[in-house]
Amino acid sequence: VQVEKLSKLCYVAEIDLSNKTIGAVIQKEWKVKVVPTIIILKEGKEVMRYEPGISMRFDEEEIFNKIRKQIK
Image 1: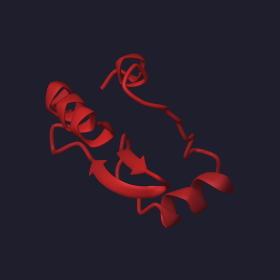
Image 2 (image 1 turned 60 degrees about the horizontal axis):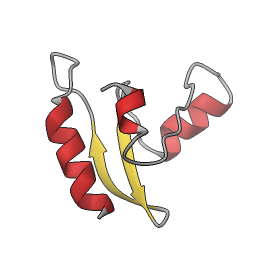
Image 3 (image 1 turned 90 degrees about the vertical axis):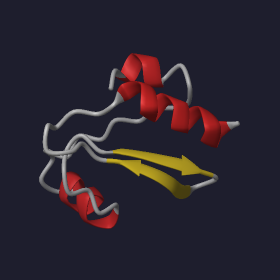
């Protein structure tokens, strides 16, 4: 998923999980098992999560459509 396209729909924050201190805490607290993971929050609560399948690819259009529905 292209972050530039996603940022047109909603606020986007990218987290660098390679930082051994902060990254490990974030990965554990948010239960991130695979990178990239997209977590959609609404009013501070997780409402959707997207993790790539075996191919490590997302269906970009499907994700954008679901996000559009959530933010309306």
